[in-house]
Image 1 (cartoon, helix red, strand yellow):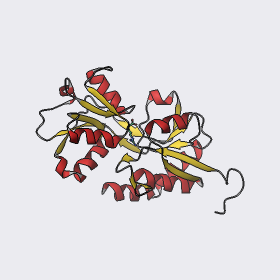
Image 2 (cartoon, rainbow, N blue to C red; image 1 turned 90 degrees about the vertical axis):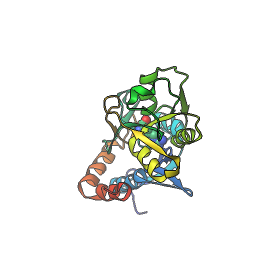
Image 3 (cartoon, protein in one colour; image 1 turned 30 degrees about the vertical axis):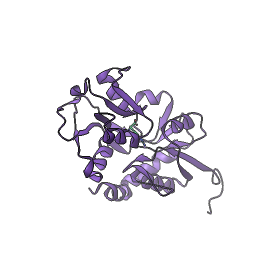
Image 4 (cartoon, rainbow, N blue to C red; image 1 turned 90 degrees about the horizontal axis):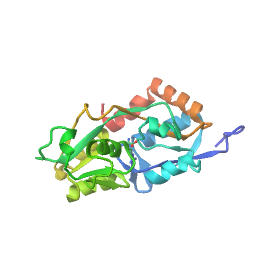
Length: 232
Ligand code: ARG
């Protein structure tokens, strides 16, 4: 590559938890998905060289904090609590939580989760939302370290419900018809969320990345990638 001059030789390492289709999942040894394509477009636009690594969720959070990773791209919700430790890029995707349950489960809203065995990915906004409903130390709450593990627990009957990000749950239901799952939405109990790239506090790359995100949203690239993964 021809880049030269200030910062041109630097290669950023960007972490993820790649069991979160359609945002990031493994295809062979490659991370694919909406986040992977968007990240590629953004980094190219910003003129930054990078490597996208399936670090896992907790190692990603630790790595961005101690700056062994320069960013995380993993459908990460921008929250006030995380902002105490990290910076975020400009928001790039709107989300909310949803409840996934086996078809036929009698549940109308998040309040019906009381007393049910719930699975969440540890340390996510789904974890937080479930804690709010059943209590922080509830023995009914099982925490898993990847998104895929929560869905597997639901299919195995280890848990009766999973609280997770809506686009991921929808993708899972659609691609696993034999799992016979259904989704329960609840805007009263589940807040609107926005995804951003997770950055270390005072990241030297934030401005470049934000400008690139803006350009990509304005020049049609974002829309193209969106169409590819969410078919409109
Ligand atoms: N949006 C949620 C959060 O930030 C869940 C993200 C999970 N991402 C993943 N790649 N497993 O807490």
